[in-house]
Amino acid sequence: MPNVSMLIVLAMLTVAAGLTFIRLVKGPTLPDRVIAIDLIGVLMVCVLVVMAGLTAEAAFLDVAMVVALISFVGTVAYARYIERERS
Amino acid sequence: MIDWLSSALLLAGATLALLAGVGVLRMPDVFTRMQASTKASTLGLGCLLAGVALKNPESSFVIRAMSMAAFLLLTTAVAAHVIARAAARSGAPIWKGTLVDERPAVAADGGDSGKDRSANACCDAPPGPS
Image (cartoon, rainbow over all chains, first blue to last red; front, side):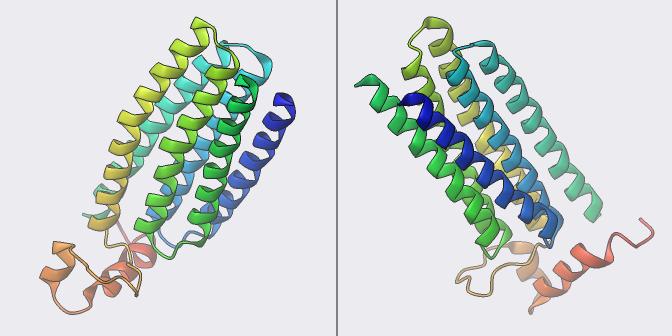
């Protein structure tokens, strides 16, 4: 039963990533795309966390933490780029 | 019992993530989209971490999940704030149904210059010289 729920969770996360990707392609302004990229990074971290539970392998949590850290730094860098592009 | 609880937490987290995807696609505005996505990354990922830590109650899982949740609560707010400030300063268009617009830069320009600045920010800037 828990494995079935985890597979359902993975499917839902995939659908969420697909919807976010539509916004990434469509997004009218640059901040929209940055938000979509940030959310895709978060969903990637979610998938890694669920995979850690599915395989009972704690190393996936380390990978998820590194991905979250790099996604955060990338988001801040994109925001600085948006602010600098204006001037 | 623990299995059912962790399954419920995992499904709650995935539902929040799915709602964030729908919100980012359907919301009318940069700022409303941002609040939809930020909630997913705090509460949704927090629920997923709690569910995974409940399913594998070992010290290696629980310590990593807790430290990741703490790290997430710190960084998500900072990232959302930085994106919102950048969007507001670059003159992102705001939804027509917004009741209160407290952005000082747009109000200082006077009139409905928000739309003009947004048009400049989204379409005219990339082909420009700088």
